[in-house]
Length: 115
Image (cartoon, rainbow, N blue to C red):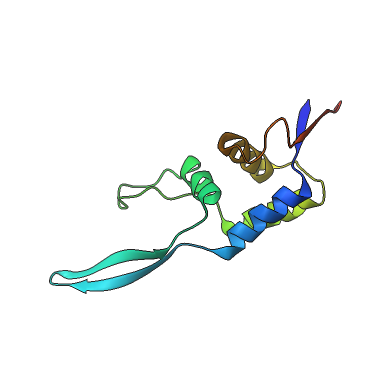
């Protein structure tokens, strides 16, 4: 079984990006009521992670809801920084990091481990 290990420096950058910003909206009055406008947005890798894992909900909401939780993502990144690359969130983070080119075969260590 191949196991990708993300370098601690890369994990620290992901944590810093995640802690550095989050989705913030404000309401602006219009003639018909209010509209919501984003003031700041999530970092790109976290936005992609949320978009890739949506919950099946009723059609009440126009936009899909995510099953990803910021606090659980931060806990997973903390575990990953200590070398524990197992778990559902770790796998999801590694997949997004690979997809975006944050990690690649050149800057990630791949080792084979027997189960």
